[in-house]
Image 1 (cartoon, one colour):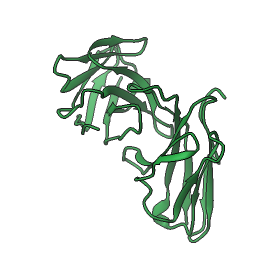
Image 2 (spheres, each protein chain N blue to C red; image 1 turned 60 degrees about the horizontal axis):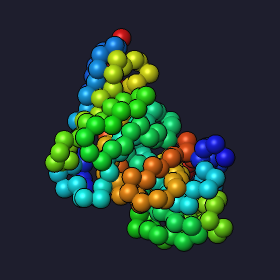
Image 3 (cartoon, each protein chain N blue to C red; image 1 turned 90 degrees about the vertical axis):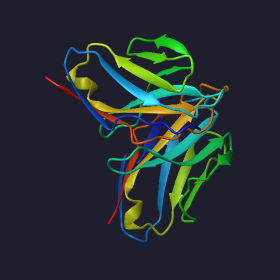
Length: 115
Length: 108
């Protein structure tokens, strides 16, 4: 596609529920990233995929958070037993890995509100 | 990746040139310097990237001294629509780490 697409754009869920957020990267981009951004803060790194595998998941806050990218394209971020503190904008980004100086392109984000 | 330090906020007026300086004292040989812009309710948008000396595109210029320990983003003749948060990052082809950025407020 023309850009990184994220769905849903907005999600309100009850505390304790399960949530899935989807990301469609730019066609042909091998790397995919998930970030989380709270109000007034910069984006916080969660996980980075190179192809189908998670190259770095050091930013996932705990085991309630999980992400997959089974075919090396679309990715899903999964949050179990949501808590009010999970409320944030979840940003997905993609890039064409080619060494240093790689440019990362972001989607518009999925706004998650846990009530 | 090198830690970056930039002003928390800046104000300027329409039509002025704005320069935002970022320090990255511990930048590594393979790191590039990249700037992103973020408007409220939108994802960050790539502005410009450089390795050394000067880079210019249709939006901005990036000045990097020889020691690469700092960089300056220059926005020529800003308008109200340039009000945003600007992030300075060092990047190495994998994940990027954001700081708090500089909140630029353009006044009429």
